[in-house]
Length: 437
Image (tube, rainbow, N blue to C red; front, side, top):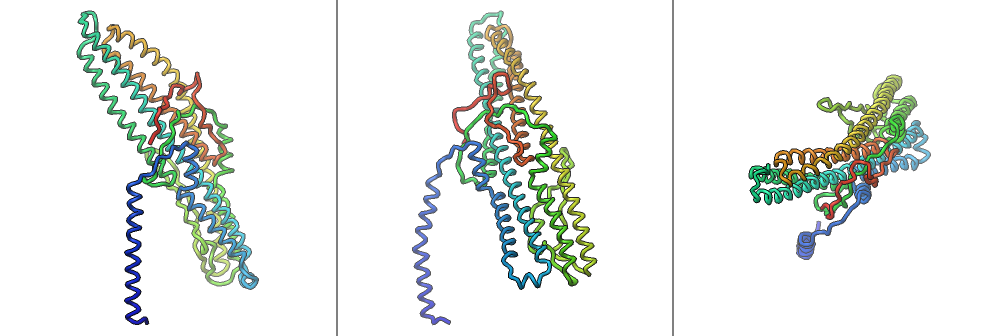
């Protein structure tokens, strides 16, 4: 036990250290508050790269892989004595090898989930921006027509169909469209916030995205080819198949061990770490998955333990079949979503061309005083509705492409750089001059 004098000296030294470090801490905090970080302008590829590097879900999956590799190395480092005493050591090593492969599948799944989340929220920003620009152009057009109608009304020509009520209708329409544009502005902010989280950052990360048009419609592979890609490349499919192999080895391990209570492979790790997706049966239908049953140990005589391990192995086989069916269904659903948006965008492109010609004719007649403001606004609303629906179809289309990339684990790679051509939908999508903060 230290003497009181020594204790007092230590206390004074600790107090001096606290007093010395406190100003430094306050200075760092002040610098953090007063010097806001500058904006970074990020492309889609930049955002995906940051997501794969910073997203906690990806980092966690890679840490699980590293832990599985360390576990395998730990078995390899066991000496000859341990191998002689543990008759199941070779089986446990085989399970550990498959555990590393299972963790690798988890990394693949996490990475493609992150790619999809980043891509989805990036183009959600582009969609909100496109809708905002549609409303902005409508407001500019109506305001221009209102000024011209006001000048015509001053002429006092009784043959003109334009009245003071028409001016009021136009003014109300401008305010209505400006109010609706607020929703699009808020939508952009919400999409940016979701994109930030998908990349793995909190609200303190300042960035801007470089705006691009929503990609043009593009074909994919045939449905059967997409399903084959998904089943052969998905991390979840590999994990389920490898887990079945692990439980098969567990049957053998229980057969070589003596005792009334024998540990299983689950004793060295948590096979329930990955959440099992639950089903949905409301407006949307999504069947739920099933998971493994892996107790940390099995109790009883050898024959009883082996019998129970065999039944757990049978359940693991059912998990493989269920996983295969769910992946096939998911791929099929995403394909049909792509098909719907592809066909819908083509039809809306034709409607937009017709609406553009109609609005031009109606504008000319309105300026000449041949029709009233109600007819002009009605036609203008139809044109705006068609353009908004086309933007939505292109947005749904790009989300379907991103989903097909995710469900096939990169077997299908969309071309997000495709720009709308002369005869393809989306050729007039605006690209604003300013970045989206």
